[in-house]
Image (tube, rainbow, N blue to C red; front, side, top):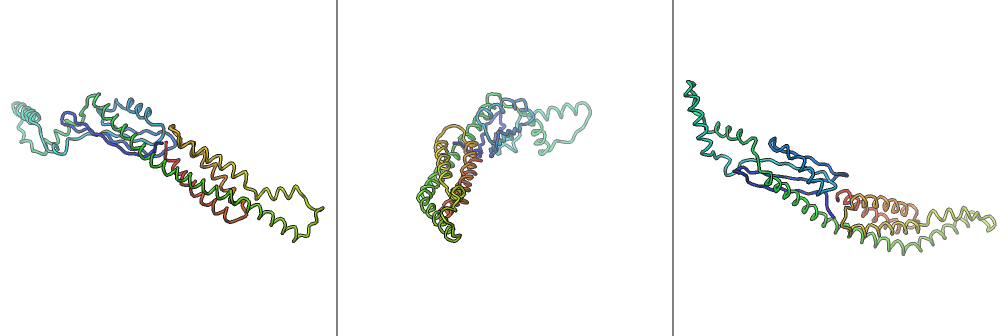
Length: 281
């Protein structure tokens, strides 16, 4: 089971420039990809998008690559740059144009402009991106493992509630019988005046057996589903809707408060499971 939320970053050093790749993932019904690259690396967007699609099937994934001088070198100026500036300054002066001496801050600006289109070897760029996506994938699996444990707890909790409801079904049936007998007595209905079709229809409105059977079936499917190694988010979301429908019906049809209370607990667990379903791949 994989979560759809995660974060990862990787860094690589190329010719004194620190290239960093950051990827974030949030939940989404589909796979949404956003890629931000420096101008000099824009041509790599195609294969990066393909790599994301191969590794993920759902989620809003943002990937960004940027670069800068390492912190300890942010104020450093290479000897080659100083020589190049001095050589060009002397060349301009030899043509009769007198320039003031270049300040330290101006040299830093020149260095940053020259680094604006910094490039990285294709192999190193692929390593950087693949490492970041691999970390993101592991992060999502780690979160998914924690989610799986919680879903299993919810399944066990609902199974206990359903066991309690099954034991209470007999009490619910007795309550149906008492209600019928009370109505019969209060209305002074004789046996020959009984409309059996109407009576069975009325009793059926309080019988929750069908809902119990269907709910058990859905819960069993969920228990098997979360053991699967495939992507289960959409299926789990569907089953939570079906279980919620059955739980609501049980709650409305039951005549005794104990069943209604168990149904409320079940609905609370379903809502939590539904939130998980919307956040797993």
